[in-house]
Length: 250
Image 1 (cartoon, rainbow, N blue to C red):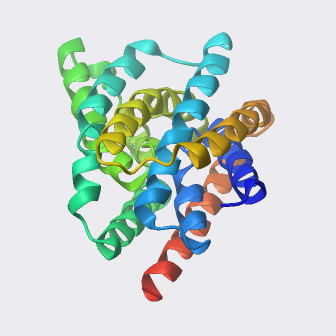
Image 2 (image 1 turned 135 degrees about the vertical axis):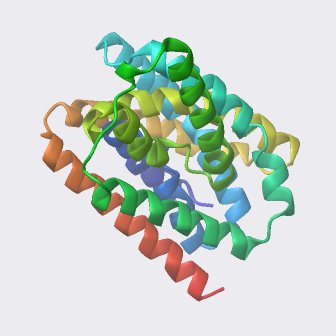
């Protein structure tokens, strides 16, 4: 593929990673599919670029003291286990089933986060052991689905951490991006073993996404929680529209 569309895609996905704490797959996978790339290789490029975006973004967030490592590390370890299965899943799943799973993943996350119950639950009332068990298995489940669909996990972690910890979308973003450090690295290894990584394209998108992450982390400080949530809703809707269009035309 040409350098220009890949670099622009990386820049845009990086901004979304910095602002929303998502891996960028909700932008990259549908966009590459519309450009004619097979969904499996689109997922491979998406996961590979997440390594660049998530590590660089987490470094910047760490300097700003925005990451709760007690939560992030437990989530991340669970994500490693779940993401390690992504290569096997993509090898045996059909193209149509992957698109449908991607759409359903995005749709239900969107509904749960924006239209679900306003009641929140905090882990403060749980023991440290129970809290870590919940976080570990949450990370594991998110890792299985997220890396297999090329989305990193930030989209699913937003409603998850909002439900259990009572965090708003702006507070979740640094934690979700830190989780993606673990899930993307494990997912990339799994996809490499399945011969589904395209290093040249992934490297271009990844480097440009680092620039985007820097812009995104600068922008998030300027946004109110309400504006942030509205912008995140727009990302969900755009992703679902592009994916549904691809499913219809398969």
